[in-house]
Length: 327
Ligand code: GLV
Image 1 (tube, rainbow, N blue to C red):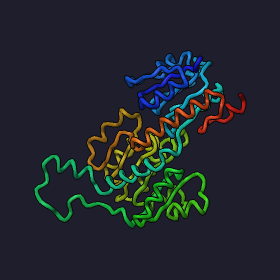
Image 2 (image 1 turned 45 degrees about the horizontal axis):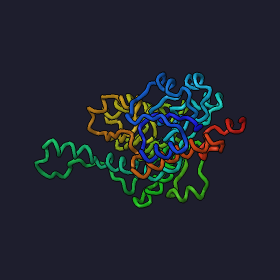
Image 3 (image 1 turned 90 degrees about the vertical axis):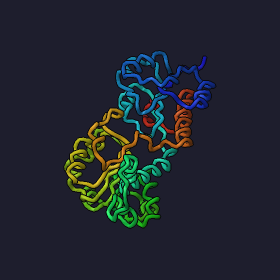
Image 4 (image 1 turned 180 degrees about the horizontal axis):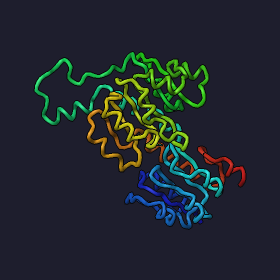
């Protein structure tokens, strides 16, 4: 008998087909959003769960499903999974690192350019019929080339963003728990490791690419925003909750920083509606990894992990190796 899995969200049909060759699959191609309690029920009798960042995979789900062996997230971030509870319950948890680094870095660049150079703001103005004449100061803003880029969270995506800055002759500062090796710093456009305060005071453009955890909650709040230059921009590519969105809205309203580009929000998709009243924000719906090849690679990577986990092998992207060691 094939192992049973639940695919919690709609996914590429070819990946579903691949999963069906290995598993007895119950899927959600209607793409309903399940609450934590509904998901707990959907997981009943299943050996594996294919999840995305939208699904809360809780301690209660593990407690109610002692048969569950693996939860495989189609995302590099996994703060939707209670990893400590998974480990305690002996359930393997996996993510999809690496396959999305370059696409996400491209999008970080798109957000940075759109935010600093006021692309969406000016387009909305044009579409609203306001464009009657060229003016020397229409939509002027900061330069990107030659400026100082501050990257908070210098993992593989942060490094891919830094590499792109070479073409823009930028200085790169980064803040990360641990310093990169000298070789990696050179590859990342000679990035210089600094404290968070120095980065926030010095950078012209700050990009956030650190993972969300209790420790990184509100890494950027009112106090941090107050350190930034009034001409600076802030880009959040990481996760909602890393920025205190209410504090950011207040700072943007008061002109404390020039603009923000946001792909992720607290409580998304029900983000703070006050953002909509601000012209100096670029808002996108959590799409940094959304190129077709990358999303397909992420889905296949999650499938690879599930196939390995449920056939007695170590999944390539196991987040809690203690589970495998204890098995
Ligand atoms: C997307 O947000 C991811 O974590 O992959």
